[in-house]
Length: 232
Ligand SMILES: Nc1ncnc2c1ncn2[C@@H]1O[C@H](COP(=O)(O)OP(=O)(O)OP(=O)(O)O)[C@@H](O)[C@H]1O
Ligand SMILES: [Mg+2]
Image (cartoon, rainbow, N blue to C red; front, top):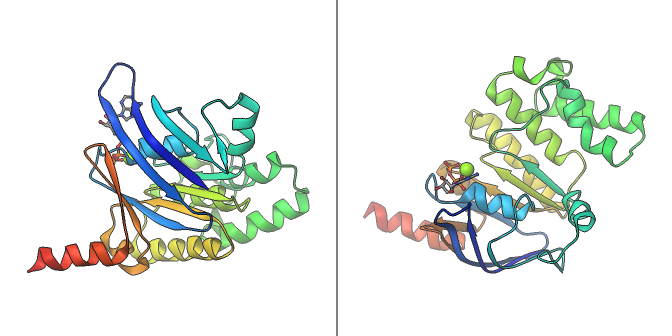
C-alpha cells in the first residue's frame, strides 16, 4: 500500500525534519504513529497524503512510484485517501452536513444516498442536532468529529488521521477508534498519529515511532516490554 525508501524531507533551506525513513505498510494494516511534539508526525502524514514531495528518497503508493507522477495521477490517488487533519480544515461557510457530504458529491454519488449516509454518520458521531451548524459555531471536539466523518464517509482505501481524538473525551475517543477498527476490518489501511497511551494500550496496533528524524516500526509486544522496563 505504502513504501518509503530512504525518504528525507526538509522545508526550504531548513534542516531535514525527516531522515532516511524506510517502512512498508501492507494493505489492510493498522498502525499508530507516535513521537514527541515536533518529531515529524504531521510532516510524515503530509508525504503520505501527497501534500508534499520528499526532498530525497522514493515513495510508492498503491503500487506506483509517486516521484515521477503527473498532477492528474496524483489527484486520482488522493481521492482514495481520507485525511483527518490535525487542524481539521473544515470549510467554514459550509454546514457540518455539507462538509461531510463533500467527498461523496465530488465522486458523484446520488443525492439520496448522500442524504442517508451523511445523516446516519452524523447521528453516529453524536452530531445529529448540529447538521446545519457552521464549523466556527462548533466546539473543538465537535469540529473534530465532523472532520472524522468527512474523512471516512467515502470509505477510503487509506485513512490518515492526525491526532483524531486529541480534542475528544475518552469515551467518544474510544467510540471513534472503534469506527476506525470497523473500517479496517472492511479493508481500509489506517495510520493514526496519537499521543494517547490509553488508546495505544487499548487497541494494541503496531506503531511507527518517530524520534530525531528517524522511524522505527514496533510491534505491540516491544512497547509493552519497554513500558514494563520503565516501571521497574
Ligand atoms: N510548513 C513548515 N515549514 C517549515 N517547517 C515546518 C513546517 N511544518 C513543520 N515544520 C517543522 O518540522 C518539524 C516537524 O514538525 P511536525 O509538525 O511534522 O511535528 P509533529 O510530530 O506533528 O508535532 P506535534 O506533535 O506538535 O503535532 C518541526 O521542527 C517543525 O518546526
Ligand atoms: Mg503534528
